Amino acid sequence: MEKKIDYSDDIKTIKKIMEESSRFLSLSGLSGIFAGVTAIAGACVAQYGILKSRTFFINDMVSTLSDKEFSSVKIQIVADALIVLSIALAGSFYFSFRKARESGQKIWTPVSKRLLLNLFIPLIAGSIFIIVLYFQNQWQLIVPAMLIFYGLALINAGKFTYSEVFYLGLAELITGFASAFFPTITLLFWLIGFGALHICYGLIMYRKYK
Image 1 (cartoon, rainbow, N blue to C red):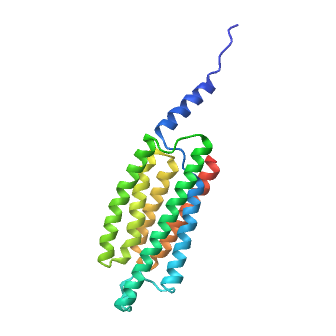
Image 2: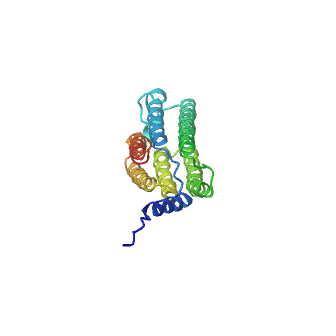
Image 3: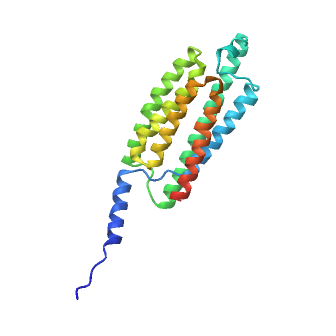
């Protein structure tokens, strides 16, 4: 009787090689958790340290500030956002680099280059639009724009990595549109979009792909 040869292991190996050649698989769930915690910390600093529990994203509050106070608050808010962004990006790179090293993968590949290109095109477009909103004092639209363009960036880059990134992008997009409809609580949507959603995404990624 002829013995059947089991090719299942070979098929799994081929599938893994094809997947690694077409998708960037070094994203770490820890980077999502770290980014979420960083965003929550930054929002708390903005709300209780800079704004003193006031609502900054509506024109009624802005009109009560003097020009000097308004300029000072703007600079502090921007500085806080840039610090949060820098820390989150540094953490994301660190955890992804660590995961790639542990799994013996290269982090700088043609796939990762395409991922970054597709990620940064919407982000750069969004940054320019947000700068326009900043100089026109359209504060109620800044957080929605951040969430919407960030969601579009994740959706655009999702085809080059885990599918969870695509779904995170959809969630960010929905949160951004909801924030536009409720400008008086836009900081809450910041906490949800950049904080809670990132933490949930990170936990799912960590448990599924650890």
